[in-house]
Length: 181
Image (cartoon, rainbow, N blue to C red; front, side):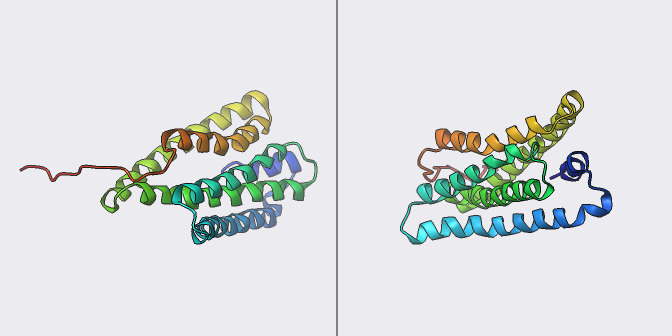
């Protein structure tokens, strides 16, 4: 999202005053995706699915919905690019709605804030790194294609990592004895 206005300017020639509607549409699609991602896993829970199956299926659907973003850098029509970016941001928000609840699915209430905080820290560091990396890629290649390929594959890779690290999303057994004073 940080690079979206520059992308729309570079690829589609939008000026600052022309960015309004495309950005409004993308951000509103993201909002819908956030609600839909939470609704989707809740729907699976209502069908009697386990937390593991419900969350990972919702996350897989969201990860697959991000994949078409790989074409956004090469399409010639502005509104097709906006739709692809909007779909990806919606899917990202749906993914996030489920990712953030993994902490409460797997950890006791007393540990959830710490787990989510550590995850947020990692995400912030990752965001700084990818923003810098994006700048280098754009300077070196002059193309957004590599970044959209990374974006299109990152969620599937992340879901694979989640599956390897937590194949059943079982509650963690944490021994949190009070400190002796």
